[in-house]
Length: 600
Image 1 (cartoon, rainbow, N blue to C red):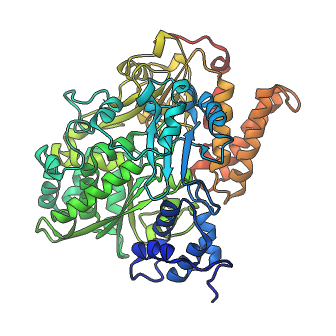
Image 2 (cartoon, rainbow, N blue to C red):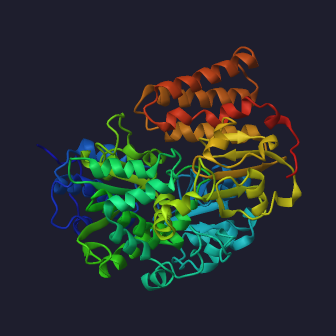
Image 3 (tube, one colour):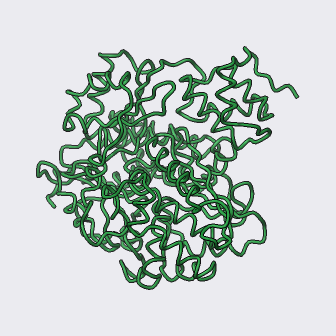
């Protein structure tokens, strides 16, 4: 088989960069993404000689390597400037002046595509507007304009330009404390350590009670752990809300071997940042939760998949994995209990679709991040075709809490249908944007008040619940209890815990246009209903915004609903099935487009 790409051979620097990642490995397709990351980080793009060498080392045909390299936003097959700024222009950042910032960067640096480019949500919504700075030879780093100039983008263009050549600065506790306004308050469970202890210190974690839950899990054994998780009634916090205990039990009983534990940290839903802050502020808690899951499901290997736009989170998780391994809390015979479990870190490269669990599996395996048909489900045939327990960061962070407090006690928090504490990502036109913890059953109004209410005491026009794939609610729904059952009763969903507030000044047509463009860009294109439907939906929203409808306005709304229904009925995965939710929810409630807003 000819596995040579047409073009130059790899030079010594390119070969050394790739060899450092691959070592002696051959025919390990699952190392393709790490190899591409190493080359992109070292050179700022993917030179053809380096791709040639990767093909030969991994025994992969060029078409497969090119197919993966071109799938992700953060990889480039063309030379780029050694410094590049990704400027978020998604929903929360638009509310904080991202469009004005882009205009000024264009004047200062030229059109996008040179030293800067627009980006979908960077997961920094509580510190909007946000910029991700990429420098050749360095890991990308997030640069928050709100840290510098009090959310005044007109005064921060010079700082963005300066950041392109400024060495990385170590992130301080002040950033975490700003993002988690509740830090230090009593009664917290999931975010009690964030901003209070050193997230890179295993000793600090253990001194604050860390790894006591794993010790109890060893005493209980696999069946006992699953019993506690089932008693807790913990539902997955990634959006689907599947019972975690049932998932783990199914994997534990599966006959095929090996079993895998996977942490889905590809948090890419616009408006969501809770998993990023858990990883940045308390990474050992997530790793402890994964280790307990491994004991319960009989798994010896795990993968921690973190979105590429989270460099600080990835760095802290990697340090935490190394520290746990050195202390004997990962690896062979953990705690002398015969438990063998270790974790590999994988970084995404800019693909919202990889938050879908089967697309994430494909990405880890070195394939394009395209979803698989179900069934079979991951508990039967997941990563590498084997039984897999996959949960998101917040779900794993709940596990030590459950083992420490007991499943029944945990189930007493919240409501009968939604147990435990929940993390909410509050952003938009809000006085104190940030991450908030509250028991299920807290109302939307109460969460908004926790965050200081609407900025500048303006009225609320709408609240986006659940992110871009969620639902816009009007002020009449502010007293809805934030539970799975409570939001379902009004035709909404909690999703990833997004609470994005829009005051009376917002132009909703602009927001809907951005949401439609987001789904058009992020559709993987594998299935026709989503590939075509997201494009047609964007065109329709653009026509409505411009007032150039085909037929009557009512006809266009009928067509919008038909497009949405086709995507819901026939798309392979949740992206197409939810791509029209937020847009349809606005047109179903015309008051959201015209009302002056109401006070909380």
